[in-house]
Length: 260
Image (cartoon, rainbow, N blue to C red; front, side, top):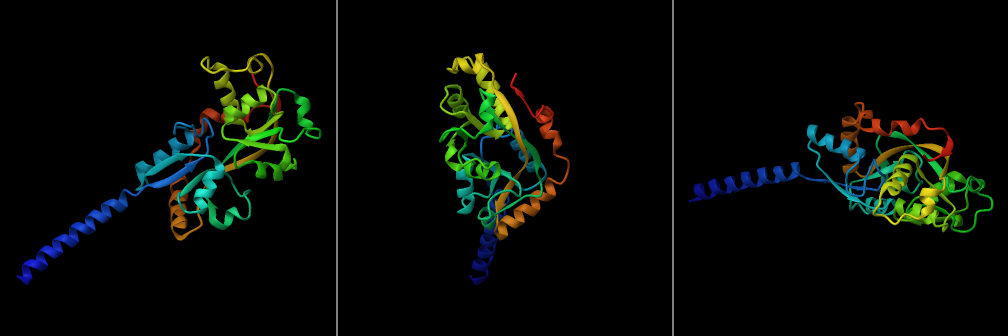
């Protein structure tokens, strides 16, 4: 009887072991991403997501993407409710951010511009309160970098909303990344189902380069996060430029001009 019980106990333990091992292998890495078209689109597609998906083929990683504002992504990472966030301004976040987060070695360069329907707004001196638009979670960072007073910024949840606000004269300037801004402007101009203000199609939209900022991905500053960072750094050590060839021409544009 004892032998029989031991036998069945051993079988149960083995089944439990292999079941737990299988579940561990299927554990998902939760990723909070700010919409950054076409790098990260609101529907969960994009060049950065394509790159991460490719990592699944050669590793045990499985990603679960959640599209959210940058402010929420940082908050969720701090509370350890998600494992990764992006895209981050590599090595340029706040001191408080690096207490709970650490960025990957991997990064790529992005260009941040000012946008307006009048180039005279790029002087910034006489811009009124809440006249410089950016996405939620970016105003403090851009204010520090640009020396534009924080009270001149206004944050909203989407680039389309920002562009519509500028077209209707509710804000004077937009400050954000070039590829995301220009591609969104082009999409709005071509989308016949969108009620695009006439100013967006009939007037010129000017841009002026602010600066280049390397973009990366951050994980939690915990033992599990350190382990994940090492794994991702190793996987991303190979050339990843193949995923960004379609946006390379944006980096070659003049430092200022008109969006065609």
